[in-house]
Image 1 (cartoon, rainbow, N blue to C red):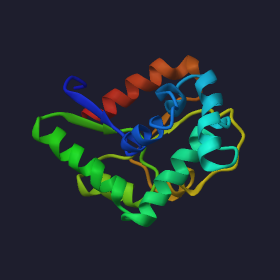
Image 2: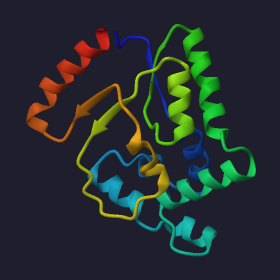
Image 3: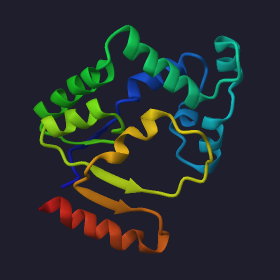
Image 4: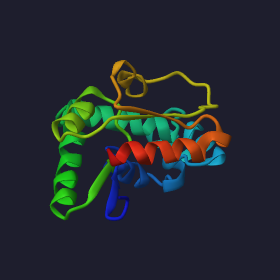
Length: 165
């Protein structure tokens, strides 16, 4: 089931833009404790360019929302939809890893996708932007609990069985 699966993210093109400012990809992804911390910490290049202390997370939000205002509110949806159509034409299964806003949720629903909430423990205390809260009122097709490492394998097996239905 997971062979020929691609993972797409609305933020991938945006991260490519922020990388141009000298921010390493791992600091934009924040996949471990250190890089999650660095994603929240003012970055020297970004702070110089923006003229005030600016973390990679802040830059992603400011540039992402700014381009939504300047170009089109669906810029990131349209870009991902092109990648989605291309992947589907190639026969790939597609996972979209960062659905947050209503227009992104609408895209998933338009293509009969399933919305899965992955519950995790976020140890970073920070003020949340609307891109991190707008999805909370959505009805999810499945909730994957990733807060208990001891139950992870069991929860993953249940999720895989659900995906087969």
